[in-house]
Image (tube, rainbow, N blue to C red; front, side, top):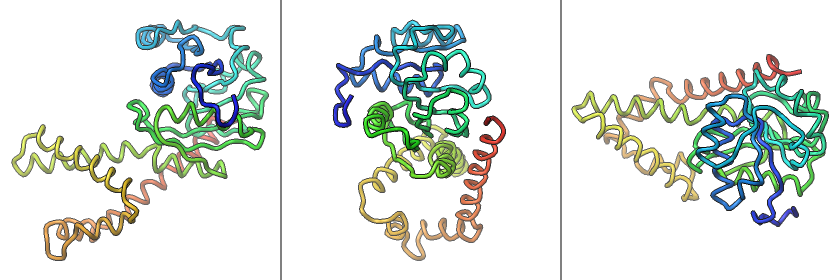
Length: 279
């Protein structure tokens, strides 16, 4: 597959190790783009998950690694960090010539290289909106991954939403803190806004609808605008007005500072995971 060839009609064989939510998000994105299910192999030990993959995509997932993995040009590691090392042993002997993509949080490419015997590795930090094609994924590639390999990764990850490459692997911990864990921050604020609406007399349904639409609309406005978030905020914050009253209270309570510190906690935890489950 050349750097510019994104044709799904000649899509190379791809194997997923793990068939959970993130694997399903990527598989679904690829199939929506026209990649045939016959190009996709899934290894998934849990019977219920294999059944779900069969129902959703028509793919007969394997309960364990077999020689059929030898044809895979890309191996996607979609396993939990604590299960990663154990999962590599039966797979690595069949996939040393493949490009490897990991979506496991905190597991470094050095660890993956030690476990798989290959250095052609890309590490990804996706997020759950990938399930609806609105994901944001940070990517890091080891030097051994060429332009052709990166193009393949962009096709695969691009099927789930947007992506960005980072030059240093350590920066993926920052990606984790911002976009990887970010959807949970949004949901927390949605909870708070919904409760505020209920406290003010609205129904929970009305409040939730207002909050969700506001986040979606605000995000879309920011995405389309050439102006910074600060400028956009200032445009809707008239001194002495209702928005001003709310924003002033948040700033007095140091909400931005607390929010930044919370994301630093996520970054630190990502680093701890690498140490805890790494080689």
